[in-house]
Each structure stands twice: as structure tokens, then as C-alpha cells.
Image (cartoon, rainbow, N blue to C red; front, top):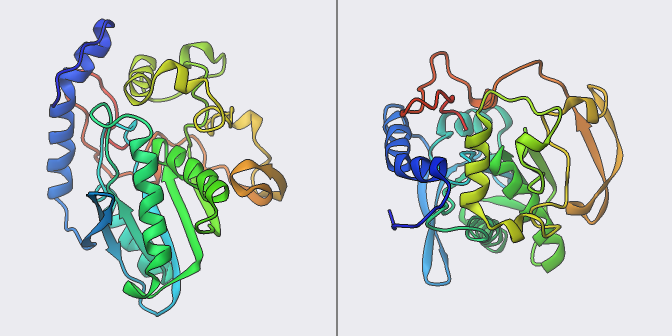
Length: 277
């Protein structure tokens, strides 16, 4: 990992742990069967790794799965089993995206990787027999942030259109630190959450809407969301105006619940965080 200087003691310690954290997660991934088909999306002198779970039928919708990990952990194989389950149950193509990670590749590297992957599939629908008019971005935590920003860029640049977004406990408020939020509650330490933000982008970028700060309520703050099962028309900058939205409460599940395992691995170093970011 490239050597970087950080003034904050916790941040320095966290960065030193990153190789170990990544190795631990990678071992967990390699310990499970990988069913996604590896493919490299060409993009401006680099290649973006993806894992494709094809639909059974032709000309089907496609879901782009964006893993979590605080922008610093994870890869496109992380949720391989969950992606395969979605592909089989929904008869849709599901693509796990291996976007670049901070701090080696800070904002907007991950955003641009996600955007380029979606654009490539939109321009090459026959490669995996997808319907480019039925494309959905789906993400968890940091991945949900990338899904949101990708949708904003799609509307702004007009190179492709998204049919929808699936955002699981999204990170949408970069302006306020967890310690500044009176109702903040999570199964992750505030210092870890703040480290993720600090390694991903600068303070100036975090306060510059709309890319990181345009949507300022956190998915876990249920008191600010509609009642469970509610659906209606709501202002949605990512969709360019109004969009049909729905919200369903899933109880008090921990961070990582969509891909939760019976006995999830823990992060090393005494951080005590679920390795299901």
C-alpha cells in the first residue's frame, strides 16, 4: 500500500490495519464457491473487474451490485452468493462490480468506475443479453452512496438511463460526522465510520453538494422515513425530479444484514466490527 501521512492517531492505526483487514475479507471470499463469471470492462487505459451472473432468459433486466466496505474494503466477489441468488430467483442478470478502493484511489475513482461499468453494459447489451432499458443499481452502505451518485451522473450526462435504485442502509450524509448526529446508532464505532469518510475524500469534497452531501438523511434514521410499506411520489434528484419510492422496515438488523451469515468473521485488530460492510 502506498505510504501516506495522517495526523490523526486513530487514522494512522486504521490505515496500517487495512492490508490485514483486506486479507481477512479476501480469505473469507475464497472460502466460498464463486459462481460469477469474471470479466474485465475496458475503460480509458485500465480495466474494471466485474463478476457476471447471467439470467436464464434473454433480454432481461440487469442489476449492478455495489458492495459496501466504507470505500476502503471489499471487492466484486464479496457478495457472490447473494448475487447468484438474485439472478436465479429473479431471472435477471446481476453484475458484481469491483470498483477501486480508497485511500489508494480516493473520490471520485470508485464513482467513475461504477459509472463506466454501467455505461459499457448499456452500450454492449448483446454481450450478456441484457435489456439496456431495464438497468438497476443496487448498493449497501458505501455501495449505496455510489449507486446514488451514479444515478445522478447518468441524469446529468445523458449517456444512459437507469430504471431504478435499490439502496440498503445508504451512506448519504457526508457533511455531518456520526458524533454530530443526535440520533446516530449503529453497530460500528464512530471512529471507524469517520475514518472511512476521511480516507475516501477531503473535507472540502464532503461539504460540496450534490455528489456527497446532496441527500442528508441516513437510511438507519427510521424516524425520518415514511411508514413501512409506504409508496408514493417523492422528490428524487438522482431521478431528475419525481420518482416512485417505497420503504420497508426490516427490524433492527445489523450492518450487513442483506448478506448476513450465521457466524460472520470479525475484523482483526480489536475493532470488533462485523465484517459485513
